[in-house]
Length: 149
Image (cartoon, rainbow, N blue to C red):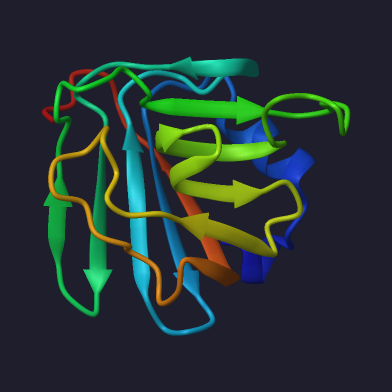
């Protein structure tokens, strides 16, 4: 919980990297609550990776789950310490493409983007209160082996 532990991206990454499947929940300052389920461990990489059992979801204002569309394999993305000239942004994301993210949290856990439509997840609308949003809180849970997606 970023309200309890602060918004240190380095601390956040240390809690998720190579830890197995996770659920990340975000509440933005506009009141929308949404998140992502990563089916495999997060790892630093400058390209997308992951499995088709990954998904994104909304909790408020309406509860919905958006599963893989099968159109591409842009499930997970985690980059840190990239230079300004890199073709991708530092932070954590799921879905979409490098310049048209499904969900992307910036590397200070202060702001994010959510673009729709997202080709990676079927019928996914913009889940945040605005396409460019301010993060109020981020929470992450680890999932035990043997999960059912």
